[in-house]
Image (cartoon, rainbow, N blue to C red; front, top):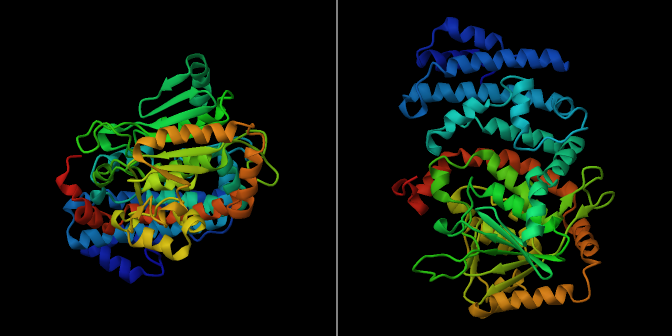
Length: 470
């Protein structure tokens, strides 16, 4: 095991090659904990080892200035600590989560859980200060301390009781959304900056609004979009919700609406997309599109629980790239322009495309799904393959009016059975427990991908991100 006391000669050779004395390395090796199953004792022993590891890492130059031997040493130290984290979590995830949530009597969001864990078991996850220090540098210059956040979430989600409780927490409406609801209902609309909500007639319309970046997703958009989705679901005046992009002031699109260009790849390259952004997005507003909002006092699963939900209609103007295409898979009906297209360029981005790998095959089948995700195949909405995702494909200037017609049809005789039918589809296709297990794998793999050298190479090759200002 890398960094373990079972490899003393290898570890000693690597660390001494980087300039450490044997007197520095030996205490680190000897501190590798032999976990016994007692939470308090194992936590204390593990924290001591993490602290020694961190003290050695701090003596190395920053990642861009490391010589080859120093780079190998940093990897050895990080791997050694990560191996201990894996062993600790393998034994104590359930106990840890119960302590963090007062025996699951209170909810802690996924984006807050690692900080809470770092306070309870120092070193198990990076501190906010460590994350902030890495946030200040480009993606390729990070050590990837946030990978340890992914390890924690992967173990929590893999544990049925803990993972189900965490999924429940992420489906609750945000406190800010509940505060803003009265403003929406009083005014009929609300401007959240990167998202707009307007309730007119029988529909609440959520407009994605990041026009300078072709409605891309980034760290600035996520809170506004989640609140907008919450508000559209909470507003009792509407029976359905519409998701669309704002009009773009760009010569190429001449004021047309653009659905979404996916993750902001320039921000990704420059280190401005934190790892937890992915988990918050998938377990938060994207899952709320698909499942609705949970109640705090009732389970969120399809069999024993309940959710507050509405049918979602996607208005696809121009294109749905990456994350934009993922939105479509969480909605109930898609109206697209005949000139619009969809892509899931995960290979070029070097990441896992959210929950698309779970949902896409239900629409297009396994082979085409793999072509989309692994070979960046483009789907024109008007093509036979595109129509597997798009319910109606109309002239570009008829998209908005067609959406209005779909709203009228969906609500013309009431939407009493809409939630029941959505749940019936989910329990057959993607019940909450299946989503939880998928996210356990995703949380770990996305963390590794996010800090992989291959991601930087892909962005440089396909996006030329190094030439774009951050």
